[in-house]
Amino acid sequence: MRILVIEDEKKVAGFIKTGLEQESYAVDVAYDGTEGENFAQVNEYDAIILDIMLPKKSGFEVLKELKGLGVKAPVLLLTARDSVEDRVKGLDLGADDYLTKPFAFEELLARLRVLMRRGGYGAAPLKFADLSLDPATRKARRGDTDIELTVKEYALLEYLLRNPNRVLTRTLIAEHVWDQTFDTETNVVDVYINHLRTKIDKDSPKKLIHTVRGVGYVLKEE
Image 1 (cartoon, one colour):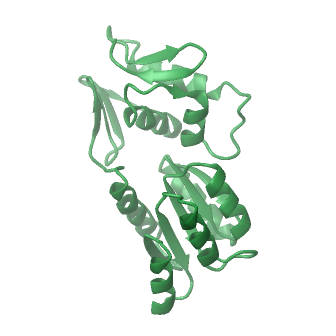
Image 2 (image 1 turned 90 degrees about the vertical axis):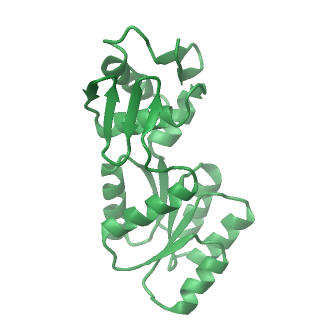
Image 3 (image 1 turned 120 degrees about the vertical axis):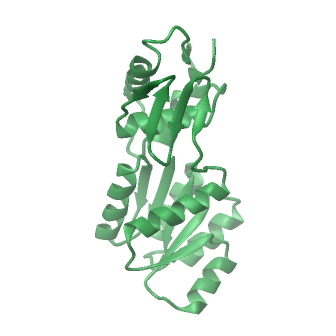
């Protein structure tokens, strides 16, 4: 899943980005309101973390613009001012939740999980055939065999399991599993698909990850 962080304080932004990446999220960071608004219009995100006090364009202005354009990603507002007026204004403009600085990262994660459950990204185990992935414990299994996954392998498998029987292009996969700095000229998507195949399909007579030549990949039963 891919998150956009719009935060001008680089230490705070770096802290959030590092923490979220350790949780298998792909994270883009924008350091002012104008850049953040552009990112949100060009890319598809599963959630947006938006600071209110931003250069060039305030978080309120960005929020109003994005909601006016029909951007559906849930928005978590960050504010250094714990005033009722700010909270009410943000919620009235379309924010889904807010968090007051300073905050504990665990609380940020919990609030993100709530927002994404509302959007259908629950913590219930994902299953397809005899393959399962439990987002709560971050454990994968094929039949009776536990599968050890790296952070990116986990993110890739989660995306495949959330889209079974759907042909996913390499571009779609890259956009959801990697961030804005991803080099589209590399073969990193193919490399990670091969890693997953080795762990998931190699020892099973029934293959689940299939190549759609010239397009991408699909998780399906043969």
